[in-house]
Image (cartoon, rainbow, N blue to C red; front, side):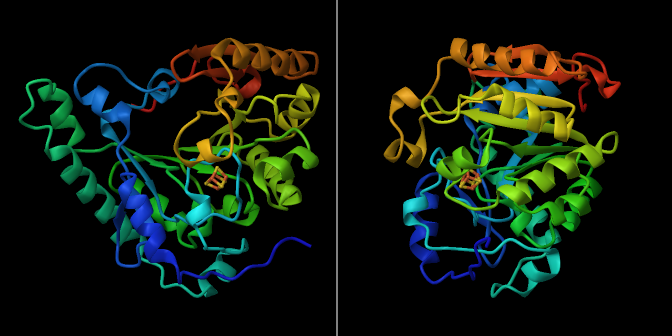
Length: 338
Ligand code: SF4
């Protein structure tokens, strides 16, 4: 049986305060959506660098709104930087209709998009007068071009995700959605510019150790959904490598990757930050060389099949390696969004 839980927001106030202390800014009336600026935005606005998503996919960090429409999550991943310990919120997975019935008032997509853009502008406004600010970058940052729907929580638990994506697109913005894959029904409905699935285990036993959840069959269904999206939206699987836990069985990963047939695979190190430090030791964060070695093992397994996957890029500072699916009919190196 997959878990069934109802949403309880009773202890949400303490959770909200914890997240606010960590720099999350809630938007909307119901406070289930949040926006947060990242280190790379500040670097980019000063002309001092860009995040790996810029290198791989052409995203300008200073024009990116990092947000979530759902601070809730149905998994309890050991590597999550959220304060899982402070959360007493459970929400069931399910179809859009089932999610809408859960006992929370959901803010509308329009309210969330407007709130996020407004809040992002307020957050960057302090940079206007700084001598370190690049004036052109600041002017661009005032008109965000991209929404990374991936901050914390699981976005497919927001029952109007399809409409939220459409609303961002209607504002002339592109969208990345990062999902844990537990809601294949929702993935079927949505069309972001790029769809990421976080795959953090090569098999069910390790999945349960990493995610502390019981959705393996749903995640496998989501892999099939990614395959079906081929050519309609850019698809990516991200593997977060945790030393001593899931950096094993490259054959298992390769089998799952072949099933999803995504355009790209990101193999990335777990980062020892936030609340994950309470659950994992620093040794669980692999060095870039180790991530590269493991990505190479996976790519070798894929290469020995009929697929045409190849390592095409890396970012040492972010400890991430990019594998491209050359049979996607796209260039080996990603084309950019802008
Ligand atoms: S799926 Fe993502 S947000 Fe949810 S617990 Fe895991 S890492 Fe955290």
